[in-house]
Length: 232
Image (cartoon, rainbow, N blue to C red; front, top):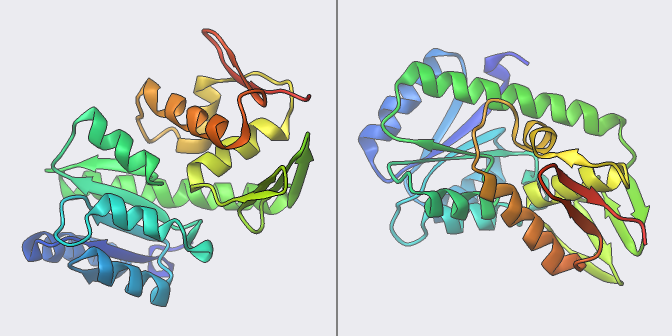
């Protein structure tokens, strides 16, 4: 897709940052919408269905983490990329962002050219993922778990689970080839993309959350290598 075919939503409570980032993205041909707080971001995202949301973390009323969590509850925004843009670079802050369903975590300050390159890389990677998903089975049934790719829904023991985007994609990846050991590198590349650097704990957090929801027996850790889905 051309840059002009992408719609972006920028969310930041600092007008100067909104103006500066918006100006540089519009120069690249992107369609850009802006808003100054999380509550308005939810309303605008529902209305315009953006391809990517650049979301500040530190905002009044509803911060970026909470906003991200709420956005991920909206079914038709599951394929929307959410990148957190913040001056906070601590590990715990990044983990909170990924747990909320963010696709990337970008630390301020950042040069416009670098930010634009990151955004382009995220959009291209998501286009590839959607293309792959279009050729994948819509529904996987394994053990007592049903994974519906089209509805972004997981049913286990007759209980429905609306998983965050990354958890869902990780589960689908592992379950697509039961018994295969997926290395950490394979998982990072497939789920987060080569252009995104995430810490080792990020994948562990997502695996732990899947086990909490679906049980400990379905995903096995292969020490020093990665993870595999077990057929019971």
